[in-house]
Image 1 (cartoon, rainbow, N blue to C red):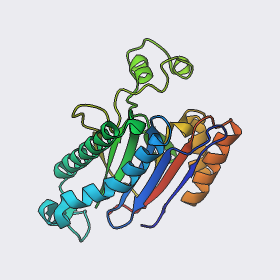
Image 2 (image 1 turned 180 degrees about the vertical axis):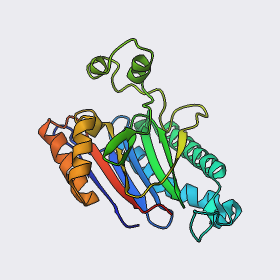
Image 3 (image 1 turned 90 degrees about the vertical axis):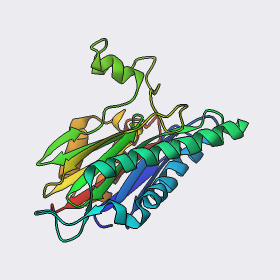
Length: 261
């Protein structure tokens, strides 16, 4: 997979890095996770998400044959996953992963409460499917404009959307960090998935709250505009977070999608 890079840093305060990321070249899938739970459980949960999600997607594809369709006009020379089927596949893969983490947390007292946020981008021909559960985010940088693709699954995000608190108040609210959805939660709760058509020059950013919690959207957009290479963007954003004190682990993954097919 060309045009993708990621950096994960423990930050300036935390003793351990409980974030993880992975890019799977053969699938065209990038995933970022932020672990939660006491002791080593958070790091384990994030690692499970990053390692297992590509495996579960690949297994559910069954080689890709049952989900492929003949190429359509403007969609390149190879078959692409039907969009509805691909979204369903992603939702089911994340749900299966959530069940696995929940079982692991129930079987081992030391991993009680283990869970993780997850955000993933999966390219299928001329489209990208963005899935998330929790408050790790996906951003699209297109034509010099930064757009947030995901809506945080958290209590403060609900309060902001309902108009009860402002964005500024959310950053200092006592419920900050309390999630309404995460991978490994009880019950069969599906992640959110959306699809966007790729345009020439599109750039994606996937990140944990260790970045967006201390670096604002204007600063993120400036780094994406200033740096030509994905690795340089990630490095600049990590360093900016650390200059702000980086109270949490920080993970960024930047993917230059290239030309639209």
